[in-house]
Picture: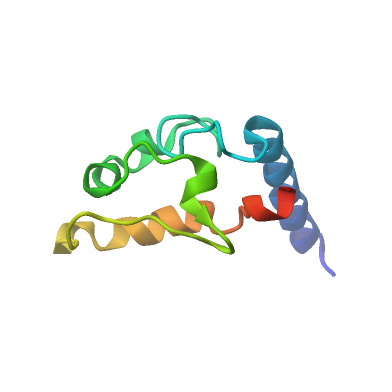
Length: 101
């Protein structure tokens, strides 16, 4: 195992521990409005996705349904928006609130 791999693992673990301490089970944390992953709220990082999200006031616990993230849109994506859900997914894909309970 090389040093880069160990460092990445440590960074992921450190990020997960910081998220856990910030949101606990996610029931009282706004998915979009609170800075629960990183230093900036997701509404600032992904304003276009928030604008087309069907439930803009969703909590972290509600967005993580059983074993996966469930972000629903009120309309289809246009060409300029296609990459943004992938970028959001990369940001949240390693965070699994169900494992914290």
